[in-house]
Length: 81
Image 1 (cartoon, rainbow, N blue to C red):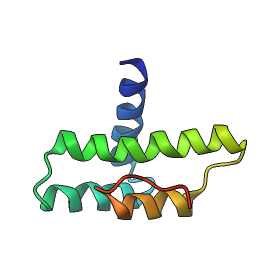
Image 2: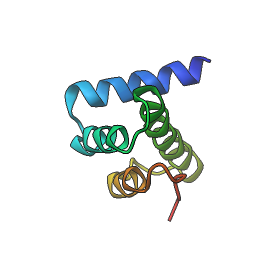
Image 3: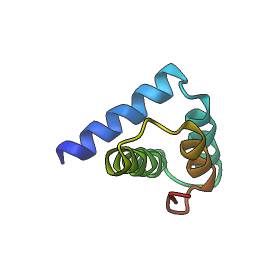
Image 4: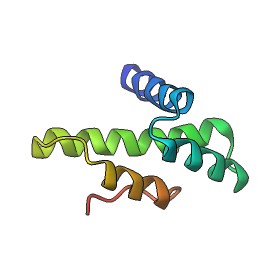
């Protein structure tokens, strides 16, 4: 529950700040596809969680290109490629 809340806060912050703008674009797209607001945020949170995992696993910096690719793949699961 604590991690879920943290990731959802990150989603809300990205949407509020429009940073990166692809988060808002993805959120709006998912809603247009008939996905509820809450589920759209959960999908985006899944991408944030995956990116966090890869950062920690590989000890690398945030990969914006990979993050955007995974946003564009939603609602499919994120991929590391």
